[in-house]
Image: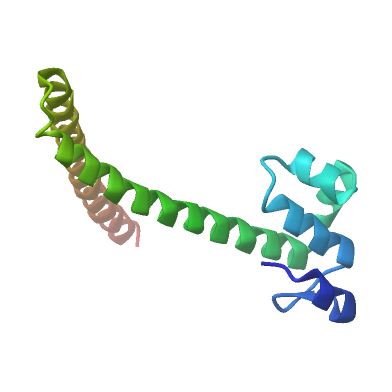
Length: 143
């Protein structure tokens, strides 16, 4: 996370030279749902934000923070998924037939969806290999 005290002293955010206002914006952006909200909290205009995007250092730092936030969110979802699956499995033994029916239905649908996605992935892999081979044949004939 961004430490604003240190930025005031040396104007760097994780090794990137940014202004104090840019650092404030980044800290607000990480906890905001929109750019507009982050701009408002950081007390800058959206125009200023878009001007800053022209600066490669700011743009790269923003992108790195976005990637880190997405990765952190994904990891939280993975943890929740594990707990959700455990709870779903426990519900298979619920005394209520209705609950058991819905749990079984959910598990079956989930497995069918996984199988469908795996088949699609395999088909895409085969198509990409064919396109690659076809492309190599064309470039050899063109020479």
